[in-house]
Amino acid sequence: MSDKKPFRFSLQSFNTTSPKSWRSLIDKTEALGYSTFFLADHVLSAGPAMDSTYHPPQMLAAVPAIAMALQQTTTLRVGCRVFCNDYRNPVVLAKEAATMDYLSEGRLEFGIGAGWIKAEYDAIGLPFDEFPQRFSRCAEFVHAYKAFMTGEPLSIKGDFINWSGFSGIPASAQRPHPPLMIGGGSKKILGFAGREADIVSLNFNNRAGMLGPDGMNSGLAAATAQKIQWVRDGAGPRFGELELEIGAYNTIVTDHQLPTATAIGEMLGMSAEDILTHPHCLIGSIDYMCEELERRRETYGISYIAVLDDGENNMVETFAPVVKRLAGK
Image (cartoon, rainbow, N blue to C red; front, side):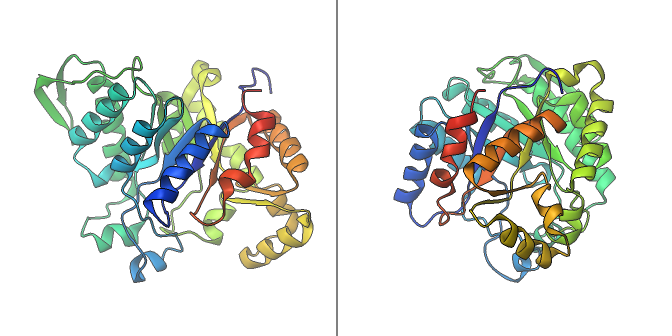
């Protein structure tokens, strides 16, 4: 694939064992050359609701944790991968984003999605509308977000957002707005991301409302290639400007690649080959990971990779040799 973009790497974390360890993790992320530190946007802690989704509980609220990470660092980009559009008043979220970008002098990355964990919606008493309505709200917010960041007077009359009689201040430091990441796994949202995003986060199609085999199957190699075609179709001539991002959710540095992949595959009803070629998995030695990421960039154009630190797996240091070897190249 021509016009390869340089590699960037992010660390995503939303749990910690103490405030001190959280601050230490942020410092390490910056010192070890990661581009970005990401939060996620889920509100449930451990309990029956979150247990039913197989999603790890989230300890920290995204906005204050992002603000703290920005305050503590000087070069690290910080953001949310991704905000759930339905969880906040749209103008509050836009103003919070603009404020964080302004005060950090332009280091915010802003991710948004339509929401997908039905059990979380149910647990907090929020209606879980059908996807077309959730998508429409999200799409309308994206246009409002871009308008807010200009600092100009606002006049927006939509089906869900009606803003008038005020200006979007503070205007963001980054122009025309902090880089916009849109994440998802369906044709509709990825086509929209191609038209509107700066960064497209390729994710599972979480139509089941939980993590599991259905989602993993929707992220297999052939399915990922199809998703990128949806992005390309939506983007048209601007496709080359987009940064393609993906979460390597199963990242395991090991010299026992095949047994590890086989064990994971057995849990998910997949072959070891499915796991080793799965764009959301990265299993093997540091040398293998570097070679595989270069192969995937050549095949798919994916250059922005997120790895997950759960507060105990020390992924920030384990994966650092890959970051050192490939970041910016």
